[in-house]
Image: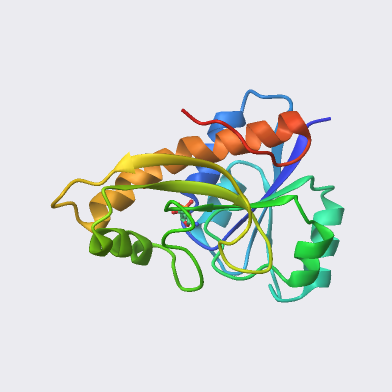
Length: 195
Ligand code: GRF
């Protein structure tokens, strides 16, 4: 039986695609569901790959989440560009089984409102010489759960937020599959090495 992954999204879905591509020949892990709070491009990408999709009627309703995750026998929930909070009842029920990818080196540049280009603008504005991506466990507070793995990129003087965003995204596309593969091997999300 493969380890069954649900990916929850709000946007374009490049991490979803990278994850699917990375595990396509791996019999031990499968993306069985993609869910979104809105009609996101990522849902179409999932449909084209023959993956079941779900648009939440109410992303704040824990029963909708729990029914859905139970229906697809989900082992792991991956937040990949999901812009809303996971209901706290779901976080409790799936404690230790929900991970998120964030486009910076948490605990720097995380928290409510820190997503997308805002993150990279903050990196540039801070004069950081290094940025990167983080995979972490999800708890009730945005971007606070235990860090499982990180990867870094250098930030050059003169880089724009868009430059940093592009570099970090390439890295995310390798970091997230590494996190999911490590989770599949261990049967739950675990700290993993990335190099
Ligand atoms: C990524 O940068 C991810 O780190 C953040 O949201 C973005 C999603 O991008 N949480 P995509 O939809 O996977 O292309």
